[in-house]
Length: 114
Image (cartoon, rainbow, N blue to C red; front, side, top):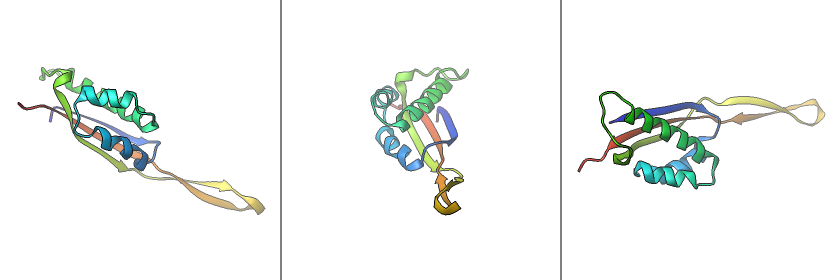
């Protein structure tokens, strides 16, 4: 394990994030960045931000002399966070519940072993 990055309580449902996460899991960092840059989903921008953070953690650490093109995504997890429960007014003075789903993202990068 070279570096980690995480983002908690992201305001998007985990199901939508997993659609994009499944595409880039296990890929090279350069390839994953290209995929995320041209994917037309909200989750792609969020995962791209986490990926950039993980790469910066790996490249800028004091004890590591790793290059960006030698890294790959070794672990990528998208889990459900606590739900935000809200109420919406409906007819005749009543209220209907609805739920905002939130997500946690954990990403680990590792160096390719030859």
